[in-house]
Figure 1 (cartoon, one colour):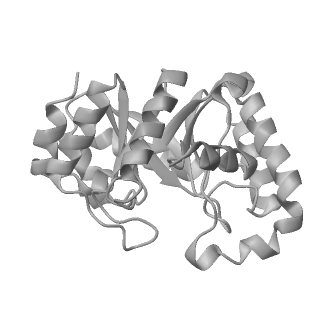
Figure 2 (spheres, rainbow, N blue to C red; figure 1 turned 90 degrees about the vertical axis):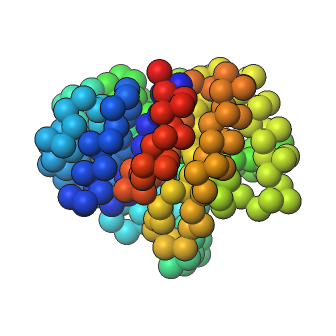
Length: 255
């Protein structure tokens, strides 16, 4: 199995954890612009030249990608990708506004349709621009939620847009009451889309600052679930939380 990592805060301290990555892996580095990403990518490559590096865009005003984001942010991001000038893997972090960003539901409600069309055009045109999209999406606990996420513009059909879907199967954050049903839905999605990837964690906090950490034995359980169901790629949130204990678990499953 291929084990990748997200890194939301690519500080020198967090990037040093890449020294532990002695197996094939892609590190998704968060950055506020393509230029910033390239600068951080060089720093990561200095720590570990063997890892592959992907761009995780953080939008200036609206952080995540969704139809509720500011249109000016979205247009700027799409233009940046269109003119990237190199083949690049990009994480489309599809999440609805939360916490301090909840005001965006009201502020941008009338821009929803236009923004959704812009996102669809990005997914449709990305291959022509040399952009490989990995779309981080919510784990749907039911068919109803899967359809709702599509309508809300935070999930897209891989058969139509030919990207890769990475479902954020963060079992430390999914309520226990819906975890079995969510697992069943993920198994269903895997059968429909053999290239489905899973995000695992969390092993460090992120933007919300209160994400519960996944014990090493539960990471082992989640990776075993992936292996049993023929998943080939996991991306762990996030690199900065990597410890020797987590490493020993991960190394059991790497190619």
